[in-house]
Length: 185
Image (cartoon, rainbow, N blue to C red):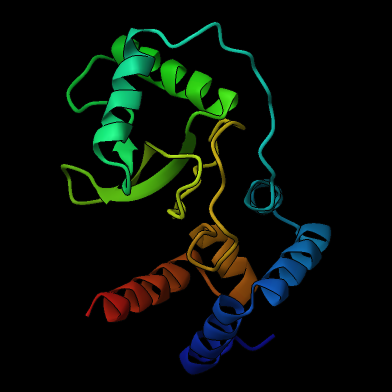
């Protein structure tokens, strides 16, 4: 089987990026025909819906701090885990965000941001329930109470993009990076 050229791959990427229905259809086909187990796992997570419903007994100290931060930034998103905290403290902040998201007082999403080592990493943030902000990342191990981003080519992992386009992950990554750079320019 002959590998497609870069222009064919770019055209396929742009078509799938422009048509969410075609993307979802192609993901369903890929899920049924995938030979690689990790591709099946990534595809299943890409189409996963949020779940879970918990009942809170009232906002605790960190929940109140997150709600106050949301009130101070009504149009934006608030990062859940402050920088430079221990893993135990980070867990407490994530648990506070979970209770706010499950009770409907906030929406939890992942947004990509540059890390200290200049890599794009997903960061858990809270938004108001009526906010129009959508996440742009959804890690494989994301909890069910975090709202997944709208299904787009950008929200799919490079493994899924590579499977959709019929290329290597490296080619899919380079292509996605070029598209991001062109959009930022």
